[in-house]
Image 1: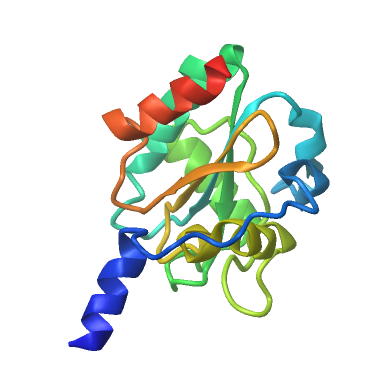
Image 2 (image 1 turned 60 degrees about the vertical axis):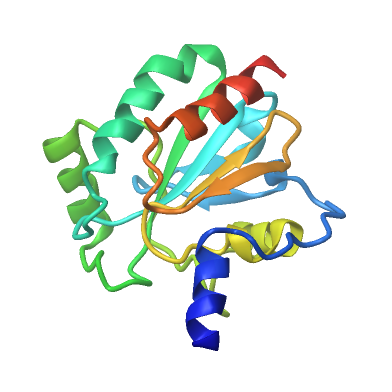
Length: 181
């Protein structure tokens, strides 16, 4: 019963967030792009960033449509969507080329995609370790399509669990608020 309560609290972010000292900002990190390029978050200063761990074989994979719509509708309003493929949840077995082809063919994805990396555990990408340190356990992906919203100040504005769609009122309210800041 205790385990269920802890899982519930973790999933809904009820447990207190970490003390955010922010010795670094999101802009201090970069991802290797799926095409071999660098995705330097410093290139997106003064923009709102949505960093989402993604997978091709997940029940939430249709959210790619919503993420692409978000990118298309908001990229001219200083918002950047970055997809981060991961196989941490055993739902992204493909190579970077297969992932890219899947995203482009099935969802018309043209927002930046990182190469496949770990987002949890000891081998997690430094961005995800930073997010956990500064925002607490709510920043740790519990599943694919976990969303981390970075404000224009380079700090985490909030995080959203996989089941929160990018088209949800709560998510869009935060995005619009951060864009106006």
